[in-house]
Image 1 (cartoon, helix red, strand yellow):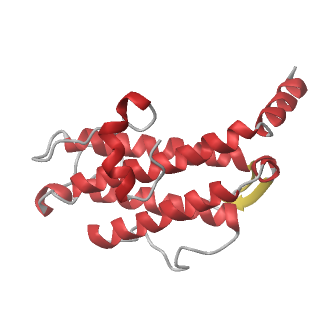
Image 2 (spheres, rainbow, N blue to C red; image 1 turned 135 degrees about the horizontal axis):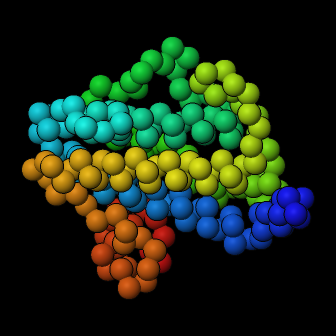
Length: 195
């Protein structure tokens, strides 16, 4: 059964729809970050940096973690170095450079997904975790995990915004045609396909 399940997963990965799906997820990631950052940029520093009851504490720390992990996974996928070799706990101390770095990472992830072939998606990458443990993963599953990671932490930030003076933005208007009017302006501003 396990061998048959792995074979089905490999056959599904070669389906042209998987690459399209991952590309749309990368575009959704860029749009969602844009909406979330737009809200966070309106926060006073006292609300943005305050330590909250959440995994990383402040809204800033969560946003910084997202962009750090995005670059880390892009390094694993491309073999290129994006993060400084002496990176510590925090990449950015202020929101403006963090937002710009996230935009750059989002665009790099979109470009990666645009260029990924079916063969790329079923290929494997090997890397060390931050604790030094060595792993080998299939590219499509690494991408799927990255998108889940982003959604998870954006959800935490969205919840934290509920306790601030800035209302959390709507983040679920990306996929349905009935929501096109609600996202069209953002898509044009981000140079994303208006679908």
